[in-house]
Length: 277
Length: 307
Image (cartoon, rainbow over all chains, first blue to last red; front, side):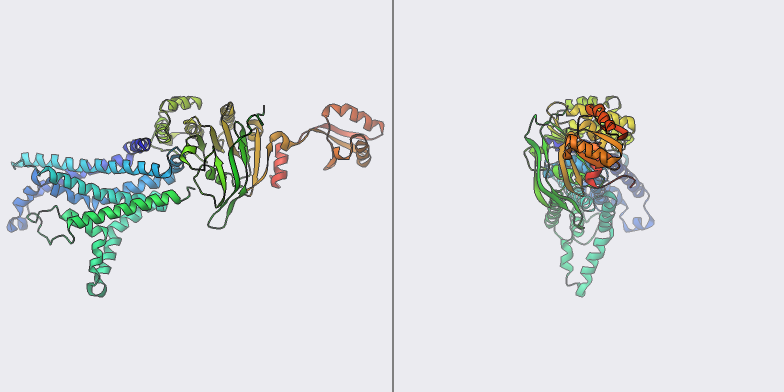
């Protein structure tokens, strides 16, 4: 198992797509903070009139960095995770490297476990990078804007990192499963992104509308609403007044974990049973 | 020098091994083959005969529809067995963004091989000087050699090579055959799948011929080619045949096209010529004859190029 994890980690850390995504995460985080800060300094007349201009600046403070950055995890981060997952497994078919992998000593499930561990470790790297850069950007803004340097509690930071990692892990594994199902990366990432951005929205809206909303409750068991609720649970209503999340954070985390297990088991079953042509 | 019989125990043994795909295509049909330890076994068959499908079953990449196989004493795909097998099935599969050395390091980690083996196998396939280049930039020959290097990482008891000279230029083919010959020396068993008859003649101790998924025959190259003999073209042919039957017996004489084929030591050619001439039979051709593997192959598979 150690050898499989080592091999997979080596592949991930050398792979251009993985490095590019890490660069994108870093770039987008810093850029978003910079643009938000500019907007906070130059509020529109409406924002001034509504009295939320000072809040815009406070939102960028170190105390709020977890609440602020976790919004980047869905759907943007999820989409990136799907792309990486689809590439990680789909490319193995197009490069014919799956047969190389499966004809070495570890069995299929051990090889897959090594891959999943290394992949989820990379998701954690991306999460830590995201939060680390958000924290760094917020402190720069605090120093430039004369805001107080107060940090959220370590528990809040850990909860935020954990929630973000969970979401990325789910969509990354979903992308991997699609890569195995379609035996290629392009169709897998296309299907994954369509599901994430469009298909799920259409389906939940339809279910919600059927019979005067009789089945509205069913939509709470889809991944999207649960991920959305988990993320919204971090957002203080002081900054973004909105209706309370559709489901509780505990239920949301449980449902996401269940989807993660389902995707992992599906991946393992297909890998174990299917012929490698 | 064939080493058949040196070690009689089988390292690969299949029985009724069959693979039928969902679309009804019967790729391998009741294959029963036996590869002995220490030999170089040629798995010979035309393109599409089912060779690669059979090899994929032996390494556990695909499951048989029916039948069974034991490879290095284990079921195909068993991790214990895979640790003793090195294989190159069809085109070598590596990560294009990694260098040759990095690819081998990844494979070594997966296979539990020592990192020191990476340098050793790079040296064996003569890729050390180009080990830092990205795999995506390798030529076909270099890719094939890297594939063989990866197969050797575990210092395997059994080496399975599926058409390793595919896509190589003539020089590359010569080098690859030389390498395979060297790898087959000693205790290692090599299973070489190919459709190139010359390759089998040059490298293999024994050969199994497959056609339309079925194993037609399995024997040494010499046995396949049959006994040596003398080819005679004489007039009148019937009288020549009668004379030869009287001298050598009916089982030693056969017709081949417009000639007679006599099973005897070619050293007797001069004497045969004298006896025919003495009977007033004109001899227009008399030469030693040995069936080429090509003849045997086309006879067995029922295929003839250009016909």
